[in-house]
Image (cartoon, rainbow, N blue to C red; front, side, top):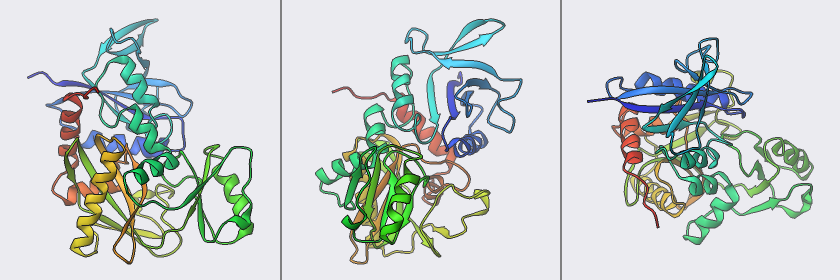
Amino acid sequence: MSRLKMGIVFGGSTEEHPVSVRSAQEIARHLDPEKYEPFWIGITRDGAWLLCDGPAAGWDGDGSRPAVLAPDSGIHGLLVLEQGRYDAVALDLVLPVVHGRLGEDGALQGLLELAGIPYVGCDVQSSALCMDKSLTYLVARGAGIATPNFWQVAANTDPHPDLFTYPVFVKPARSGSSFGVSRVTRPEELLPAVATARQYDAKVLVEEAVVGSEVGCAVLGNGPELVTGEVDRISLRHGFFRIHQESEPERGSGNSTPVVPADIPAESSRLVRETAKAIYGALGCRGLARVDMFLRADATVVLNEVNTLPGLTSYSRYPRMMAAAGLPLAEVIDRVVSLARAGRPHA
């Protein structure tokens, strides 16, 4: 049986570039060479697209070649620059592994739609929706799901510090991981925190601080047939959970430890799973996503955020939760590829 020609796009020009490269490296370690013929498409920090041998160190060196996904659906794949001319390389499917802006927000998904290539994960609409936390909250609220109270700060305006009850969190509305996020405990800290968030997005949110345990749920599937991993809980020693901020994340975080399975009552774990699936469905997710929530002392659940292309590194939460439920990364890859190939229903 012929192998599936799969393009794997990684890297990117945002702050999440190194996370994406590590995710691609972990995928490379678990990709079945008898099933897949990978075409590694790395995006440099400067935004150049290169076809390379893999995501190992030095992938953007002399052996790589300029390549782009062709928006012409007749090509259905890559245009690769070879000796002064472009050659077309057909792809059966694309696995995007570009986290954050321009990879997780619908931009890359839109290019793949134009190219007519099936791809893993959420479509343009749900990707854009989940990337913008304020829109995520509005849709979730419409589905009866609890969210934090929040206030939008428009570009070129500053909120009055006396409007809020502290502590609050200030964060970019459309950024991944914890980049640009600040916990503000006093009015005089608010405007500097807004300035920090604006380094990543012109649209800023001020959110109430939800008192509760941070829990997460890995979700996989299309439509009503969803699989969830084991629920995790973030055990904090101090401060707040700042993912992917460490210089050596493989060695763990300085202030937090993920507990998988979460050390919470069985009924709470069931509620977290059911709420995650309800959120996933309300936001139109498909393929895979990680839903982050708060579990309050009264056993109620509040949405935090949804990651439609969660990290797949050796230390990431999504693969840990799935592995704890008996689904190693190699099987997760097989399943999301099968889901992508099954096609997307049209209204």
